Amino acid sequence: MTHSSNKYILMVIAATLLSACVTKKYESPKTVSTEKLFRDQAAADSTTIADMPWQSVFKDAKLNALIQKGLDQNLNLKNAIENIVQARATLRQSKLAYYPTLNVDANVTRTKQSEAGLNFPAGININTLTTTYKLGLSTSWEADIWGKLSSSKRSAFASYLATDAARQAIQTQLISDIANNYFLLLAYDKQLEITKETLESRIKNVETIKSLKEGAIVTGAAVVQSEANRYAAEVLIPDLKQSIRETENALNILMGQAPGEIDRGVLGDQQIPENIAIGLPSQLLQNRPDVRQAELNFRVAFESTNLARTYFYPSLTLTASGGFSNLQLTDFFTNSVFYSIIGGLTQPLFNHGINKARLTTAQSQQIQALNNFQQSLLVAGQEVSNSLYAYQMAVEKQDSRAKQIESLTKAVDFTQQLLEYSSATNYTDVLTSQQNLLAAQLSGVNDNLQKLQALVDLYRALGGGWK
Image 1 (spheres, rainbow, N blue to C red):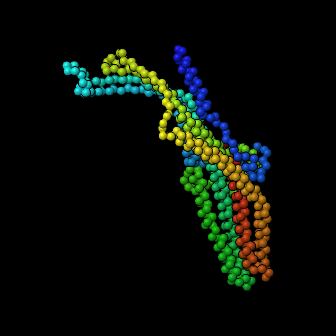
Image 2: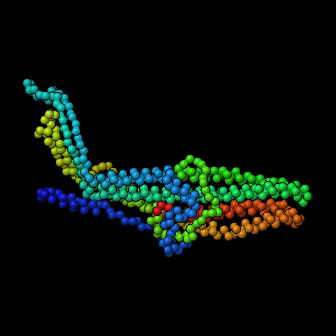
Image 3: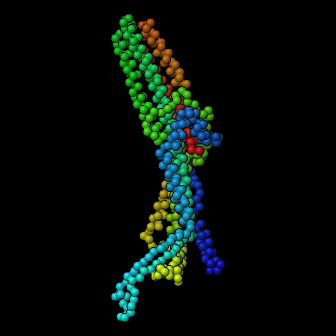
């Protein structure tokens, strides 16, 4: 190796070390304090249901089958996977930028020149029609002096990880949506069952009131009221059936299939994990895919700012070409070798402020990305707080609701008996107690639904479902 070659290599190494002065090393951004993200919750244990696989959180085999089908067929999730494929290709392309390009050039050029344009003296015979045959290779390589290629590669890598996190976020949301719609469907089934049973009871009650009128115990007004009470229950059924149909259709869309009936269990058989552990707020940084995606997007913006800085500095490019060129195809390889090697520095001097505008834009986008990251963390804490409190309130209501339903059931029985055997009451009391009982029963179903859906939302808010 010659002395000049060693000198050149040293210059390249020295220039490469200078890139540290132009681009900055990435550090995780400072976040808002995570200590109080879980409102009124002093969590000190890292155990969290987010670490549980969804097959363990949900005990219903039919629900788990629907979730698995959704993970296999959901079209949004498939698109998210394609985004990963595209990001992986971009990352591979950024890595290849470190290597020189290599092109093959093969051409035939036929040229006819003007004799008058050549302006040769008279009597000289010049061949103005020529055919040139050429076969060669050309290569070009840009030295990563200021970290331009390195920043591009790191940006592409962060973007690739961000698309994977986005896919995980879509997966957790998909599991949550399927589970919530499934429990909603079971709740509608239960409300429809209660309403049908109530309707049957009120139809019998109409016959009872008619018998009491014949016995002059009640008036015709009581008969009309009992019939209206019967229809008040009956009119609820079409709405519940419509809600069931629409929820089934929504579940089928989530599973990427045409509308149809959903095979399902019953609301009363649903089981929940015994220990609802939420872990530490700081775990959201790793467990929440959307939070990780937001941080990775910040890293992409950070590297874009690094890249924008490198445009202010010269680029070193080496190009080389060589091959064979001849006017005669029969003697193509005879004395036909040509080559050229060019090394050059390109320093931007005046480009209408494009580089400054590029850097200003990149820095502003980096600030936005940081704000988005902070916002995602705050929203994550809010969602955990809301879903946990909703779960606690649903549990708190259950005992009171059960006692309310028990009391109203007795009230209906007592008022009906008094109506038949005593003048101490009237049908208005029976009517009121029946209506209150149905409302309480339907509300009891909603309480159970609230508890199940709050558990689903809490699982997703903590970052469960993608591991």
